[in-house]
Image 1 (spheres, rainbow, N blue to C red):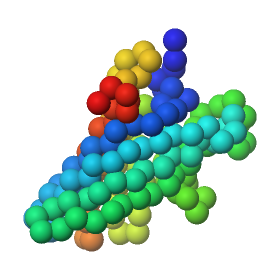
Image 2 (image 1 turned 90 degrees about the vertical axis):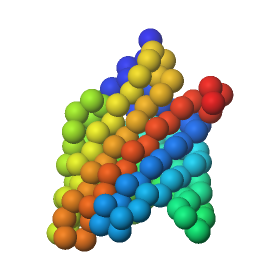
Image 3 (image 1 turned 45 degrees about the horizontal axis):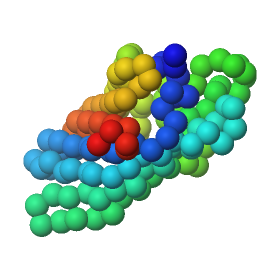
Image 4 (image 1 turned 180 degrees about the vertical axis):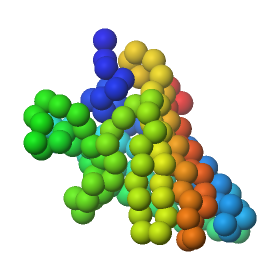
Length: 146
């Protein structure tokens, strides 16, 4: 039995489908790709996404790397997501909304996981403020189940 509240149950390669509903720009963008979560140490997971973003008349490659790490001051304790440059993004909290202030804008996110072992998980971000107004929904399916 895996614990879906920790990122350890998400190790492996996932088919990624993302929809970005940008209300400020009045357009939707889609991303198809993969997310690979790799255990680097017992307390650090590399989360690499690669894919292609499309919207009418456009198609561009996209990628990003995040790290999910245990809080350094609490070995064996809770996890947090960090940007590639090491800045804290948000606490890892499956089934609970988390917040990330970013300049004048505010991000609110939710991670949900289904199954034991986890066969599907989703991430939703809502960004609002003077510079952003979008909802980004990402679904992940085990690569061997697509």
